[in-house]
Image (cartoon, rainbow, N blue to C red):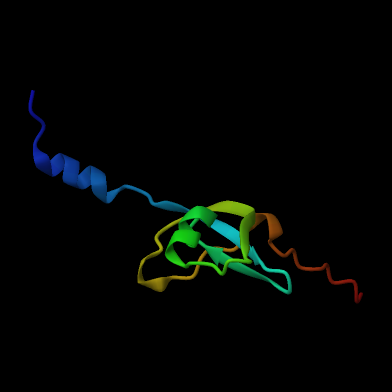
Length: 90
């Protein structure tokens, strides 16, 4: 039985996207910098070469739903979401 191609087209329109964000730390003997990226440490090191004395690792990662095209901002870490302080100024 052959399924018409337009059915696959409508199924693909309802697809959902997701991506992973990595909190990457790049350390050298004098400083540490933190970067959030959709690239894991291995991919990041291949795309952006590091100095000989730099070490790369990640300390946190989380999933986000949606797209990352057009340079959209990455979603924040849900584990570190800020909860507002209750108003205690009665």
